[in-house]
Image (cartoon, rainbow, N blue to C red; front, side, top):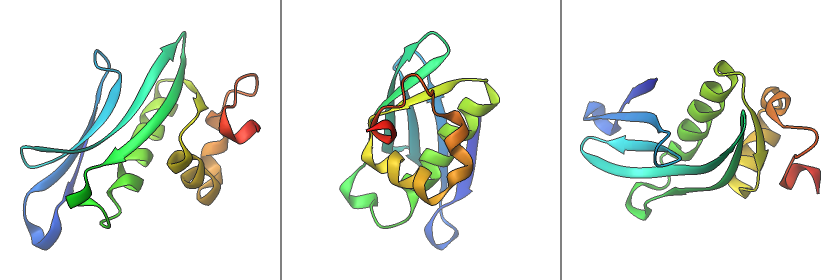
Length: 112
């Protein structure tokens, strides 16, 4: 599953995809890796560890695009999440519809 969105000034597209072998969702701008959301897999649960956007690509809202894509993809796969990433934590607080993905037995940051 990949997602595309037009980049700044109608330029190259931003693409987001899951790399299960590398255990991360990657955001690419043209041929450049611009960010990633890293996870571990525990059964059908994903343990989200951290999100990063390269400095030169910050301030464009791309972390939200990356996180939204990852959470939508995980929901479609029937996965639950344990979250240890403060950026994902803020995203879920701002978008409470994603709270349903949190594994109640292993919530991570939201359970603290």
